[in-house]
Image 1 (tube, rainbow, N blue to C red):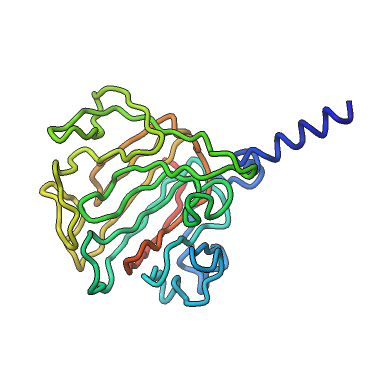
Image 2: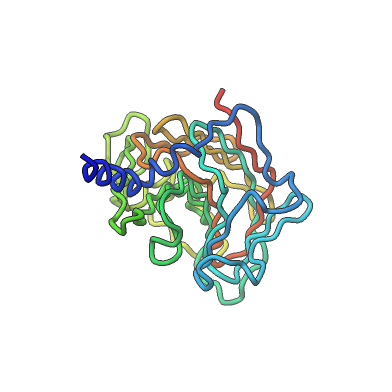
Length: 265
């Protein structure tokens, strides 16, 4: 009997979603993490250091967070969340003279499991893409569980196939299950060439030099994405369905402000 109890305990500890269960918060009031004078409510993960931030890639000043281009990684809330409405704004920073592809960053939802477990950079999560022309795309990032096994994550969405053969979200579309590839937002331009500072013909993100508003409504296993107030993407049956909120540093300077973690209405 004692051995059975040990085996059960070991199994429970190996499940990352249960590891967060006791610490996962459902907001009961509006939380504004950037109103603090420091980043004590966050942790960092960077590829070069495997954690620490000696170059100050992430800095907070006057309520504005800078995510620098010095390294790849993320700033993560120390707390995990479920059933919440995230609001945040972003603005692209300086242009790297070597950049050829679109500026890239993202808001990663439901961060789960070990840091850096996906290629030494990311962790299991569901990314709301912020790359130019791709704002609102959803990507399941599959890292590993604490036991080293791949996390069995997936998301589902109602989709249609565009003229380029790519699936996009559409409310009356066919149910499609994603376990890694990118779920394009509803009006993602067909054959869009991801070149620096280009825009898709249907983009609802603000022009370069202006702030763009992003909303991620996470209700149970459903995620709804809004860009500047326009609903652009949606998924359901999300696994994971709770976890940390991560802000990416992906080789391009970007600023974030007005981060709010709100209760669902």
